[in-house]
Image 1 (tube, helix red, strand yellow):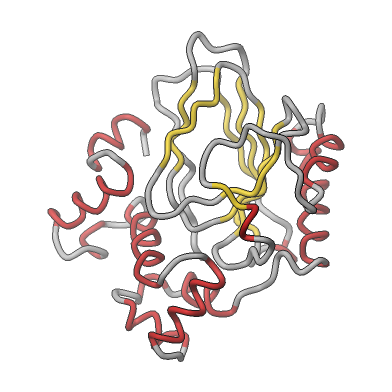
Image 2 (image 1 turned 180 degrees about the vertical axis):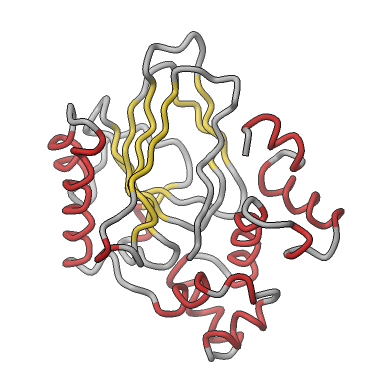
Length: 246
């Protein structure tokens, strides 16, 4: 199954803690993980979080100010988020294609304003504030189950099949053949479900795969890999590994 890497935290940074928890079995095809990102002490300078594109959607809750929340997703390039010197976030990372709520609410940048949408992000954030991460997870499960009941989170057969067979996909044509539809139909289906064209989705999935397996299994040659990696992350592969230890 698709297993995107955590976003970049520079190896030089201290007092920033990241944790993940796996979903229960009934949510395994919808939720990649529940996560927490927080400072353990006030930092001496602003922390810059290097968010990688992964085609996932995140339900993000700010535990420092529970009014601030959002539904986040990136396109095909990473972004650097300045989180300041003290922060505490938790969230739900959803697999590509399963979020079918209002796409107009989604943001691809820093979330710093109160959430005014219909998803109960703020009430959930208020309920879990002050709890240990492992105690927050069951209430985040309830949030996901509410979204399922409302039709905001829906299993997606097309993206699930693509994610389950990534190793056999080398082109958009392979992707279309795998799911048994024409490339044109695939274009409409993926754009509606994920916001990505098939070509852009494949670029993001290849980038994520390159962290888990040898890149020459995914790209035509070394030069192509370096070019695409730098365009997506802003770093050469070697500099990224040195900076973030991934």
